[in-house]
Image (cartoon, rainbow over all chains, first blue to last red; front, side, top):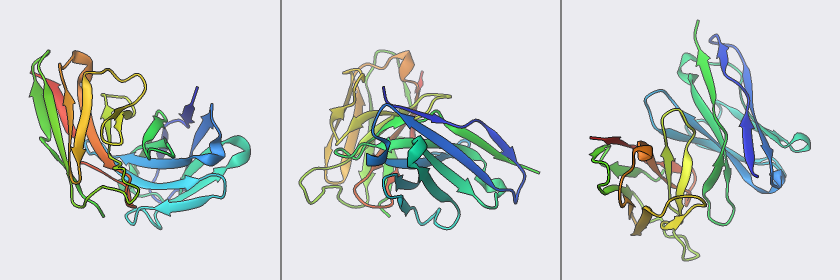
Length: 119
Length: 112
């Protein structure tokens, strides 16, 4: 069974760093892109970027380029989304999802990680 | 970026009645290989998004057959033949044809 399990809720202050995770199981982690999606409260879904775990090839949305960093650790089948300096506007729920390689569909999703940035 | 425009943004529907959501893209989503890659996702309250439809009209595993997708080029539609209470949520179209991938604004389906 394909599963993506994300790390738990985080509360941080502005300027702090953060790294959240997405652990995959039930399929070959290295051969599917992992996509990250943001949902701000009361808003829609925003495509942030994606990473190919086999070689860590990454593609970022221009809106998120330079604001976040995607990474992956093949040895533990885990993808990461990190910030070096959080802003209040980064408060949102973040989802990871697997990109199905033949149909380009986001077929399996993590449960989401809620991030709150507040002083 | 390809802009995905959904209509309506809110859809009050009576249980047992049909519902339809439109999604229009700012560019053709036809791929050079002949396929068109548009997906529809459902997000119920408090849940992560869930894939309903991929490649315009293909239902994902476990999705009830009351959900159907259609369209071509720049115009796509998601239809629910008979709305049930569990269908309440927000529906999104998505295009993975060109980077960055983009979502529609979302359509909130609610019961009258």
